[in-house]
Image (cartoon, rainbow, N blue to C red; front, side):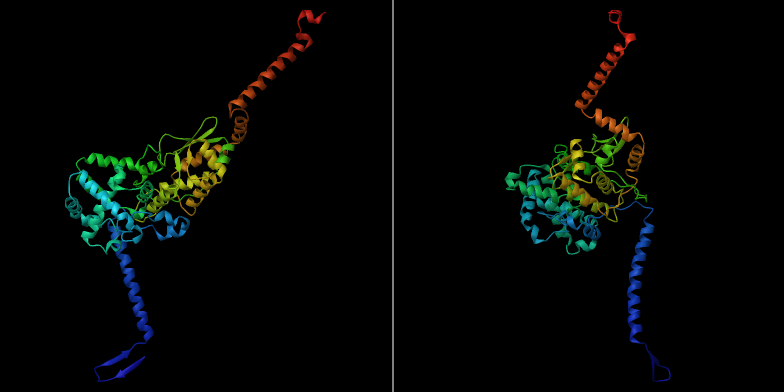
Length: 431
Protein backbone atom coordinates (compact mmCIF):
# COMPACT_ATOMS: atom_id res chain seq x y z
CA UNK A 1 0.00 0.00 0.00
CA UNK A 2 1.32 3.42 -0.94
CA UNK A 3 0.37 6.85 0.36
CA UNK A 4 0.77 9.76 -2.01
CA UNK A 5 1.28 13.00 -0.21
CA UNK A 6 -0.20 16.05 -1.75
CA UNK A 7 -1.84 18.97 -0.10
CA UNK A 8 -2.52 18.53 3.64
CA UNK A 9 -6.25 18.12 2.97
CA UNK A 10 -5.90 15.31 0.40
CA UNK A 11 -4.39 11.89 1.05
CA UNK A 12 -4.76 9.27 -1.72
CA UNK A 13 -4.52 5.61 -0.71
CA UNK A 14 -3.84 3.16 -3.58
CA UNK A 15 -5.36 -0.30 -3.06
CA UNK A 16 -3.61 -3.40 -4.41
CA UNK A 17 -4.88 -4.75 -7.75
CA UNK A 18 -5.89 -8.05 -6.10
CA UNK A 19 -8.22 -6.14 -3.77
CA UNK A 20 -9.83 -4.40 -6.75
CA UNK A 21 -10.39 -7.68 -8.57
CA UNK A 22 -11.83 -9.25 -5.43
CA UNK A 23 -14.23 -6.36 -5.05
CA UNK A 24 -15.49 -6.80 -8.61
CA UNK A 25 -15.90 -10.53 -8.02
CA UNK A 26 -17.86 -10.01 -4.79
CA UNK A 27 -19.95 -7.34 -6.48
CA UNK A 28 -21.02 -9.73 -9.24
CA UNK A 29 -21.74 -12.55 -6.81
CA UNK A 30 -23.79 -10.28 -4.56
CA UNK A 31 -25.77 -9.13 -7.58
CA UNK A 32 -26.47 -12.74 -8.52
CA UNK A 33 -27.39 -13.58 -4.92
CA UNK A 34 -29.78 -10.63 -4.74
CA UNK A 35 -31.51 -11.75 -7.92
CA UNK A 36 -32.06 -15.22 -6.49
CA UNK A 37 -33.25 -13.69 -3.22
CA UNK A 38 -35.85 -11.70 -5.14
CA UNK A 39 -37.07 -14.89 -6.79
CA UNK A 40 -37.39 -16.56 -3.38
CA UNK A 41 -39.25 -13.55 -2.01
CA UNK A 42 -41.65 -13.47 -4.96
CA UNK A 43 -42.22 -17.20 -4.71
CA UNK A 44 -43.02 -16.86 -1.01
CA UNK A 45 -45.47 -14.05 -1.69
CA UNK A 46 -47.24 -16.06 -4.36
CA UNK A 47 -47.31 -19.34 -2.45
CA UNK A 48 -50.75 -18.60 -1.03
CA UNK A 49 -52.17 -17.60 -4.40
CA UNK A 50 -53.16 -19.89 -7.20
CA UNK A 51 -50.23 -21.53 -8.95
CA UNK A 52 -49.49 -20.25 -12.44
CA UNK A 53 -49.74 -22.55 -15.42
CA UNK A 54 -46.51 -24.16 -16.66
CA UNK A 55 -44.74 -22.42 -19.51
CA UNK A 56 -44.06 -23.90 -22.92
CA UNK A 57 -40.34 -24.57 -22.69
CA UNK A 58 -37.46 -26.74 -23.77
CA UNK A 59 -36.62 -30.17 -22.43
CA UNK A 60 -34.30 -29.90 -19.45
CA UNK A 61 -30.61 -30.43 -20.13
CA UNK A 62 -30.47 -32.95 -17.30
CA UNK A 63 -33.01 -35.20 -19.01
CA UNK A 64 -31.32 -34.86 -22.39
CA UNK A 65 -28.01 -35.90 -20.87
CA UNK A 66 -29.59 -38.82 -19.01
CA UNK A 67 -31.48 -39.96 -22.09
CA UNK A 68 -28.89 -39.41 -24.81
CA UNK A 69 -30.21 -42.52 -26.59
CA UNK A 70 -33.56 -40.73 -27.02
CA UNK A 71 -32.23 -37.38 -28.22
CA UNK A 72 -34.19 -37.62 -31.46
CA UNK A 73 -37.41 -38.08 -29.49
CA UNK A 74 -37.26 -34.45 -28.35
CA UNK A 75 -36.70 -32.85 -31.76
CA UNK A 76 -39.23 -32.35 -34.58
CA UNK A 77 -38.75 -34.41 -37.71
CA UNK A 78 -40.78 -32.45 -40.22
CA UNK A 79 -42.69 -29.44 -38.89
CA UNK A 80 -41.87 -26.71 -36.36
CA UNK A 81 -44.77 -25.37 -34.30
CA UNK A 82 -44.35 -22.32 -32.11
CA UNK A 83 -41.21 -20.22 -31.68
CA UNK A 84 -38.74 -22.68 -30.13
CA UNK A 85 -37.75 -24.31 -33.44
CA UNK A 86 -39.08 -21.65 -35.81
CA UNK A 87 -36.58 -20.39 -38.36
CA UNK A 88 -34.58 -23.60 -38.54
CA UNK A 89 -33.92 -24.27 -42.25
CA UNK A 90 -34.49 -27.96 -41.57
CA UNK A 91 -38.23 -27.28 -41.28
CA UNK A 92 -38.65 -24.79 -44.13
CA UNK A 93 -40.17 -27.42 -46.42
CA UNK A 94 -43.19 -27.71 -44.12
CA UNK A 95 -43.99 -23.98 -44.14
CA UNK A 96 -45.94 -23.99 -47.45
CA UNK A 97 -48.12 -26.84 -46.19
CA UNK A 98 -48.90 -24.95 -42.98
CA UNK A 99 -49.86 -21.89 -45.02
CA UNK A 100 -52.21 -24.04 -47.13
CA UNK A 101 -53.81 -25.46 -44.00
CA UNK A 102 -54.40 -21.91 -42.74
CA UNK A 103 -55.97 -20.96 -46.07
CA UNK A 104 -58.26 -24.01 -45.89
CA UNK A 105 -59.36 -23.04 -42.38
CA UNK A 106 -60.14 -19.46 -43.44
CA UNK A 107 -61.96 -20.61 -46.60
CA UNK A 108 -64.11 -23.22 -44.83
CA UNK A 109 -65.13 -20.68 -42.20
CA UNK A 110 -65.79 -17.90 -44.74
CA UNK A 111 -63.40 -15.45 -43.14
CA UNK A 112 -60.10 -13.75 -43.95
CA UNK A 113 -56.56 -13.92 -42.68
CA UNK A 114 -56.81 -10.28 -41.56
CA UNK A 115 -59.73 -11.11 -39.28
CA UNK A 116 -58.14 -14.24 -37.79
CA UNK A 117 -54.74 -12.60 -37.40
CA UNK A 118 -56.40 -9.63 -35.72
CA UNK A 119 -58.09 -11.90 -33.19
CA UNK A 120 -54.75 -13.47 -32.26
CA UNK A 121 -53.08 -10.06 -32.18
CA UNK A 122 -55.63 -8.81 -29.65
CA UNK A 123 -54.31 -11.28 -27.06
CA UNK A 124 -50.66 -11.36 -28.04
CA UNK A 125 -49.44 -10.08 -24.65
CA UNK A 126 -51.16 -12.92 -22.81
CA UNK A 127 -49.83 -15.38 -25.38
CA UNK A 128 -46.30 -14.08 -24.84
CA UNK A 129 -46.63 -14.97 -21.17
CA UNK A 130 -46.88 -18.65 -22.17
CA UNK A 131 -43.17 -18.67 -23.02
CA UNK A 132 -39.98 -17.67 -21.28
CA UNK A 133 -39.05 -14.11 -22.35
CA UNK A 134 -35.60 -15.09 -23.61
CA UNK A 135 -37.13 -17.69 -25.97
CA UNK A 136 -39.24 -15.14 -27.87
CA UNK A 137 -37.26 -11.92 -27.52
CA UNK A 138 -36.26 -12.04 -31.20
CA UNK A 139 -39.92 -11.86 -32.29
CA UNK A 140 -41.96 -8.67 -32.15
CA UNK A 141 -45.70 -8.87 -31.52
CA UNK A 142 -46.67 -9.05 -35.19
CA UNK A 143 -44.21 -11.81 -36.07
CA UNK A 144 -45.18 -13.90 -33.06
CA UNK A 145 -48.92 -13.40 -33.66
CA UNK A 146 -48.60 -14.37 -37.34
CA UNK A 147 -46.59 -17.46 -36.45
CA UNK A 148 -49.16 -18.60 -33.88
CA UNK A 149 -52.05 -17.85 -36.25
CA UNK A 150 -50.60 -20.02 -39.05
CA UNK A 151 -49.53 -22.82 -36.71
CA UNK A 152 -52.88 -22.83 -34.91
CA UNK A 153 -54.81 -23.19 -38.17
CA UNK A 154 -52.51 -26.01 -39.24
CA UNK A 155 -53.08 -27.91 -35.98
CA UNK A 156 -56.86 -27.55 -36.25
CA UNK A 157 -56.99 -28.68 -39.87
CA UNK A 158 -54.75 -31.63 -39.17
CA UNK A 159 -56.89 -32.62 -36.21
CA UNK A 160 -60.00 -32.54 -38.39
CA UNK A 161 -58.42 -35.15 -40.70
CA UNK A 162 -59.96 -33.75 -43.81
CA UNK A 163 -59.11 -34.38 -47.44
CA UNK A 164 -55.33 -34.01 -47.49
CA UNK A 165 -55.02 -35.04 -51.13
CA UNK A 166 -56.10 -31.61 -52.31
CA UNK A 167 -53.08 -30.22 -50.46
CA UNK A 168 -50.76 -32.70 -52.18
CA UNK A 169 -49.64 -33.97 -48.77
CA UNK A 170 -48.20 -37.47 -48.72
CA UNK A 171 -49.10 -40.01 -46.07
CA UNK A 172 -45.54 -40.37 -44.76
CA UNK A 173 -45.36 -36.65 -44.06
CA UNK A 174 -48.66 -36.78 -42.19
CA UNK A 175 -47.29 -39.53 -39.96
CA UNK A 176 -44.18 -37.50 -39.12
CA UNK A 177 -46.31 -34.40 -38.54
CA UNK A 178 -48.50 -36.32 -36.11
CA UNK A 179 -45.45 -37.33 -34.07
CA UNK A 180 -44.21 -33.73 -34.07
CA UNK A 181 -47.49 -32.48 -32.58
CA UNK A 182 -46.79 -34.32 -29.30
CA UNK A 183 -43.28 -32.94 -28.66
CA UNK A 184 -42.80 -30.73 -25.61
CA UNK A 185 -40.72 -28.18 -27.52
CA UNK A 186 -43.22 -28.08 -30.40
CA UNK A 187 -46.28 -26.68 -28.63
CA UNK A 188 -48.41 -23.57 -29.02
CA UNK A 189 -50.74 -22.11 -26.36
CA UNK A 190 -54.14 -23.77 -26.28
CA UNK A 191 -55.60 -20.27 -26.13
CA UNK A 192 -54.59 -19.83 -29.79
CA UNK A 193 -56.77 -22.78 -30.76
CA UNK A 194 -59.63 -21.38 -28.67
CA UNK A 195 -59.39 -18.02 -30.44
CA UNK A 196 -59.52 -19.66 -33.86
CA UNK A 197 -62.28 -22.11 -32.88
CA UNK A 198 -64.45 -19.29 -31.53
CA UNK A 199 -64.03 -17.54 -34.89
CA UNK A 200 -65.26 -20.58 -36.84
CA UNK A 201 -68.77 -21.09 -38.24
CA UNK A 202 -69.18 -24.38 -36.37
CA UNK A 203 -67.05 -24.13 -33.21
CA UNK A 204 -68.24 -27.46 -31.81
CA UNK A 205 -66.98 -29.33 -34.87
CA UNK A 206 -63.47 -28.01 -34.38
CA UNK A 207 -63.53 -28.62 -30.63
CA UNK A 208 -64.53 -32.21 -31.25
CA UNK A 209 -61.75 -32.63 -33.79
CA UNK A 210 -59.14 -31.84 -31.14
CA UNK A 211 -60.76 -34.22 -28.66
CA UNK A 212 -60.92 -37.00 -31.24
CA UNK A 213 -57.32 -36.41 -32.27
CA UNK A 214 -56.01 -36.77 -28.70
CA UNK A 215 -58.35 -39.60 -27.72
CA UNK A 216 -58.15 -41.82 -30.75
CA UNK A 217 -60.33 -44.68 -29.49
CA UNK A 218 -60.53 -46.12 -32.98
CA UNK A 219 -56.85 -46.99 -33.12
CA UNK A 220 -56.47 -47.75 -29.38
CA UNK A 221 -53.28 -45.74 -29.29
CA UNK A 222 -51.48 -45.03 -26.05
CA UNK A 223 -52.13 -41.33 -26.67
CA UNK A 224 -55.62 -42.22 -25.47
CA UNK A 225 -54.53 -42.77 -21.90
CA UNK A 226 -51.96 -40.00 -22.09
CA UNK A 227 -54.71 -37.55 -23.00
CA UNK A 228 -56.55 -38.35 -19.78
CA UNK A 229 -53.67 -37.53 -17.46
CA UNK A 230 -51.59 -35.01 -19.41
CA UNK A 231 -52.73 -31.92 -17.52
CA UNK A 232 -53.42 -33.41 -14.06
CA UNK A 233 -51.89 -31.59 -11.13
CA UNK A 234 -51.42 -32.83 -7.60
CA UNK A 235 -49.18 -32.99 -4.57
CA UNK A 236 -45.46 -33.27 -4.95
CA UNK A 237 -43.68 -36.57 -4.50
CA UNK A 238 -43.15 -37.92 -1.01
CA UNK A 239 -40.08 -39.88 -0.10
CA UNK A 240 -40.58 -43.61 0.24
CA UNK A 241 -38.18 -46.52 0.42
CA UNK A 242 -38.40 -48.24 -2.94
CA UNK A 243 -39.26 -51.94 -2.71
CA UNK A 244 -37.78 -54.52 -4.99
CA UNK A 245 -40.22 -56.06 -7.41
CA UNK A 246 -40.55 -59.23 -9.43
CA UNK A 247 -40.82 -59.58 -13.19
CA UNK A 248 -43.90 -60.93 -14.93
CA UNK A 249 -42.33 -64.37 -15.31
CA UNK A 250 -41.52 -64.62 -11.59
CA UNK A 251 -44.96 -63.32 -10.63
CA UNK A 252 -46.58 -65.96 -12.81
CA UNK A 253 -44.64 -68.66 -11.01
CA UNK A 254 -46.08 -67.29 -7.77
CA UNK A 255 -49.62 -67.50 -9.12
CA UNK A 256 -50.13 -63.91 -10.33
CA UNK A 257 -51.59 -63.17 -13.76
CA UNK A 258 -51.84 -59.88 -15.68
CA UNK A 259 -55.17 -58.89 -17.23
CA UNK A 260 -56.13 -55.79 -19.24
CA UNK A 261 -58.70 -53.51 -17.65
CA UNK A 262 -61.46 -51.56 -19.36
CA UNK A 263 -60.05 -48.08 -18.82
CA UNK A 264 -56.90 -46.44 -20.16
CA UNK A 265 -56.01 -44.33 -17.14
CA UNK A 266 -52.35 -44.85 -16.23
CA UNK A 267 -53.15 -44.77 -12.53
CA UNK A 268 -55.84 -47.43 -12.85
CA UNK A 269 -53.65 -50.41 -11.93
CA UNK A 270 -55.07 -52.76 -9.33
CA UNK A 271 -54.42 -56.13 -7.70
CA UNK A 272 -56.95 -58.57 -6.31
CA UNK A 273 -56.74 -62.13 -5.09
CA UNK A 274 -59.12 -65.07 -4.98
CA UNK A 275 -57.45 -68.43 -5.51
CA UNK A 276 -54.77 -66.77 -7.66
CA UNK A 277 -53.64 -63.15 -7.88
CA UNK A 278 -54.47 -60.83 -10.78
CA UNK A 279 -52.95 -57.49 -11.78
CA UNK A 280 -55.25 -55.36 -13.94
CA UNK A 281 -53.52 -52.77 -16.12
CA UNK A 282 -54.38 -50.52 -19.10
CA UNK A 283 -53.82 -51.73 -22.65
CA UNK A 284 -50.52 -50.59 -24.11
CA UNK A 285 -49.67 -50.25 -27.78
CA UNK A 286 -45.93 -50.16 -28.51
CA UNK A 287 -44.74 -48.81 -31.86
CA UNK A 288 -42.21 -46.34 -33.28
CA UNK A 289 -43.95 -43.39 -31.60
CA UNK A 290 -43.99 -44.84 -28.08
CA UNK A 291 -40.54 -43.64 -27.04
CA UNK A 292 -41.11 -40.07 -28.25
CA UNK A 293 -44.52 -39.86 -26.59
CA UNK A 294 -43.41 -41.16 -23.20
CA UNK A 295 -40.12 -39.25 -23.13
CA UNK A 296 -41.80 -35.91 -23.88
CA UNK A 297 -44.37 -36.52 -21.15
CA UNK A 298 -41.54 -37.32 -18.74
CA UNK A 299 -39.90 -34.06 -19.83
CA UNK A 300 -43.15 -32.21 -19.09
CA UNK A 301 -43.33 -33.73 -15.62
CA UNK A 302 -39.75 -32.63 -14.93
CA UNK A 303 -40.48 -28.97 -15.70
CA UNK A 304 -39.95 -27.00 -12.50
CA UNK A 305 -43.13 -24.96 -12.93
CA UNK A 306 -45.37 -28.00 -13.53
CA UNK A 307 -46.76 -29.31 -10.24
CA UNK A 308 -47.81 -32.91 -10.82
CA UNK A 309 -47.80 -36.44 -9.43
CA UNK A 310 -45.33 -37.89 -11.97
CA UNK A 311 -47.88 -40.35 -13.34
CA UNK A 312 -45.96 -41.19 -16.51
CA UNK A 313 -42.61 -41.53 -14.73
CA UNK A 314 -44.18 -43.81 -12.12
CA UNK A 315 -45.94 -45.84 -14.82
CA UNK A 316 -42.70 -46.39 -16.76
CA UNK A 317 -40.85 -47.47 -13.62
CA UNK A 318 -43.69 -49.84 -12.70
CA UNK A 319 -43.57 -51.39 -16.18
CA UNK A 320 -39.81 -51.68 -15.97
CA UNK A 321 -40.16 -53.62 -12.72
CA UNK A 322 -42.44 -56.07 -14.55
CA UNK A 323 -40.36 -56.32 -17.72
CA UNK A 324 -36.83 -57.71 -17.56
CA UNK A 325 -36.56 -59.92 -20.62
CA UNK A 326 -38.36 -60.79 -23.85
CA UNK A 327 -40.18 -63.58 -22.00
CA UNK A 328 -41.90 -60.98 -19.82
CA UNK A 329 -43.03 -59.08 -22.92
CA UNK A 330 -44.38 -62.31 -24.38
CA UNK A 331 -46.43 -62.95 -21.23
CA UNK A 332 -47.95 -59.47 -21.52
CA UNK A 333 -48.75 -60.06 -25.20
CA UNK A 334 -50.41 -63.39 -24.50
CA UNK A 335 -52.45 -61.76 -21.73
CA UNK A 336 -53.73 -59.19 -24.23
CA UNK A 337 -52.31 -56.26 -22.29
CA UNK A 338 -49.53 -55.31 -24.70
CA UNK A 339 -49.68 -55.01 -28.49
CA UNK A 340 -46.23 -55.08 -30.09
CA UNK A 341 -45.89 -53.20 -33.38
CA UNK A 342 -42.27 -52.29 -32.74
CA UNK A 343 -40.50 -55.52 -33.64
CA UNK A 344 -39.21 -58.33 -31.49
CA UNK A 345 -40.11 -58.78 -27.84
CA UNK A 346 -36.45 -58.20 -27.03
CA UNK A 347 -36.67 -54.69 -28.54
CA UNK A 348 -39.69 -53.86 -26.39
CA UNK A 349 -37.98 -55.08 -23.22
CA UNK A 350 -34.87 -53.07 -24.07
CA UNK A 351 -36.97 -49.97 -24.81
CA UNK A 352 -38.70 -49.90 -21.42
CA UNK A 353 -35.51 -50.74 -19.56
CA UNK A 354 -33.77 -47.76 -21.19
CA UNK A 355 -36.69 -45.33 -20.83
CA UNK A 356 -37.06 -45.93 -17.09
CA UNK A 357 -33.36 -45.86 -16.28
CA UNK A 358 -32.39 -43.05 -13.83
CA UNK A 359 -36.02 -41.92 -13.41
CA UNK A 360 -37.40 -41.29 -9.92
CA UNK A 361 -41.08 -42.27 -9.57
CA UNK A 362 -43.66 -41.24 -7.00
CA UNK A 363 -43.67 -44.21 -4.64
CA UNK A 364 -47.22 -43.43 -3.49
CA UNK A 365 -48.75 -43.96 -6.94
CA UNK A 366 -48.74 -47.77 -6.85
CA UNK A 367 -47.82 -48.34 -3.21
CA UNK A 368 -51.06 -50.19 -2.39
CA UNK A 369 -50.65 -52.49 -5.40
CA UNK A 370 -47.01 -53.23 -4.58
CA UNK A 371 -47.86 -53.94 -0.95
CA UNK A 372 -50.65 -56.37 -1.88
CA UNK A 373 -48.42 -58.19 -4.37
CA UNK A 374 -45.63 -58.56 -1.80
CA UNK A 375 -48.09 -59.90 0.76
CA UNK A 376 -49.41 -62.43 -1.73
CA UNK A 377 -45.94 -63.58 -2.79
CA UNK A 378 -44.73 -63.89 0.81
CA UNK A 379 -47.57 -66.25 1.70
CA UNK A 380 -45.95 -69.72 2.15
CA UNK A 381 -48.96 -71.44 0.54
CA UNK A 382 -48.80 -69.35 -2.63
CA UNK A 383 -46.06 -71.30 -4.51
CA UNK A 384 -47.73 -74.65 -3.76
CA UNK A 385 -51.14 -73.40 -4.91
CA UNK A 386 -49.62 -71.96 -8.08
CA UNK A 387 -47.81 -75.22 -8.82
CA UNK A 388 -51.06 -77.18 -8.47
CA UNK A 389 -52.86 -74.75 -10.74
CA UNK A 390 -50.23 -74.77 -13.51
CA UNK A 391 -49.87 -78.54 -13.31
CA UNK A 392 -53.55 -79.44 -13.48
CA UNK A 393 -55.78 -76.43 -14.25
CA UNK A 394 -53.84 -74.12 -16.57
CA UNK A 395 -55.44 -75.61 -19.74
CA UNK A 396 -58.38 -77.89 -20.66
CA UNK A 397 -55.96 -80.72 -21.53
CA UNK A 398 -54.23 -80.72 -18.15
CA UNK A 399 -57.63 -80.56 -16.46
CA UNK A 400 -58.93 -83.51 -18.52
CA UNK A 401 -55.75 -85.44 -17.73
CA UNK A 402 -56.31 -84.76 -14.03
CA UNK A 403 -59.94 -85.88 -14.25
CA UNK A 404 -58.86 -89.01 -16.13
CA UNK A 405 -56.33 -89.80 -13.43
CA UNK A 406 -58.92 -89.25 -10.70
CA UNK A 407 -61.47 -91.48 -12.45
CA UNK A 408 -58.80 -94.13 -13.00
CA UNK A 409 -57.85 -94.03 -9.33
CA UNK A 410 -61.53 -94.21 -8.39
CA UNK A 411 -62.12 -97.32 -10.52
CA UNK A 412 -58.92 -98.88 -9.16
CA UNK A 413 -60.10 -98.24 -5.62
CA UNK A 414 -63.53 -99.76 -6.36
CA UNK A 415 -61.90 -102.77 -7.99
CA UNK A 416 -59.56 -103.23 -5.02
CA UNK A 417 -62.47 -102.94 -2.63
CA UNK A 418 -64.51 -105.64 -4.30
CA UNK A 419 -61.45 -107.87 -4.69
CA UNK A 420 -61.21 -108.29 -0.92
CA UNK A 421 -62.61 -111.68 0.30
CA UNK A 422 -65.10 -110.11 2.66
CA UNK A 423 -66.54 -107.90 -0.08
CA UNK A 424 -67.06 -110.54 -2.76
CA UNK A 425 -70.58 -111.71 -3.74
CA UNK A 426 -71.91 -114.97 -2.18
CA UNK A 427 -71.58 -117.02 -5.39
CA UNK A 428 -67.88 -116.07 -5.72
CA UNK A 429 -66.97 -116.93 -2.13
CA UNK A 430 -68.11 -120.62 -2.26
CA UNK A 431 -67.58 -122.04 -5.71
